[in-house]
Image (cartoon, rainbow, N blue to C red; front, side):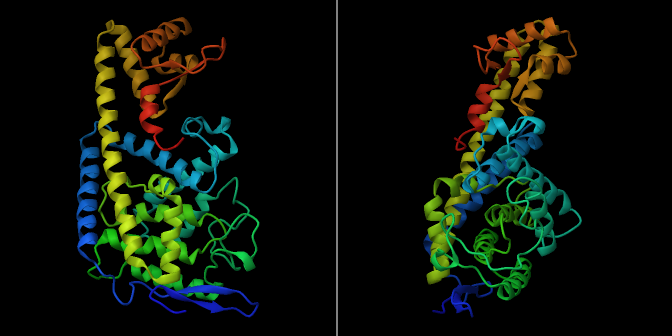
Length: 378
């Protein structure tokens, strides 16, 4: 069957792979009143998120924590078992799943930095993919290279014959990728937020890598919007929305492939931008309010204690887990003084003993901060 999104092609060995039509869809996307309303709300919500982060005292810190959260959520969609606190651990003590998430963080940071001298392109996508799968699960599947064999999507252990979806064969994949790259820079009247919805769906349909397609496709959303200057900082991460609507996410992508239902996919995507932008804006406000509250509590301490406590607070907003030894290093104080400082920070509700039954090598967390960050990662 041939429709707006593409058609299934019979292959010599008996299976049918999907060959996508190039973007934009033909007949063109029908932007009805509902889609226009969603687009307007998404634009406003994204603008508020971009605006509120500009008013934060340290917007880069907020971005760095949200990058870590996005990395975790996107990896959880693919089955990675890790918590945010594990991801924030030093790399040398991380679990293998947490290291996978750390690779994702590195891939985001690498891509943003690289885009200063290389535009978003197939070449850059391959470079980012290489960072994404640099170690751990998937590292044996040719990181940074487009696939040379047929892949398929379905339950674990399924074969081509019972796959849910079979992406383009290698030749069709190469053709589709070239046309998708052209579409990145095609000048048309399609609003940017709708255009990236189309791009994300098309990338997932092409499925150009042996592994890591979902994570790479979700990264593509942020990179493209960042390059378009729609975001001043890489802040929009839809993995939380896709995770909590996982079945609908996959169903909507399949409905595009099977029935050409682009409009329903775009509306689903725009709702995600509205929800996540609104929630992230509220989180940014909560974090700023928490910082002001704790600074006020610290300022009520004695002068020497308040100076050292401020140093610890600043460090906790970067890594919300700390040891007594680390407190001593940051504040440049003796071990007994570090113990006193920890007690003071517990008293004013900044630090919480992670395991009160533990007598040695204790760790402490900035629980109120973690509570804000951990929403959706459970």
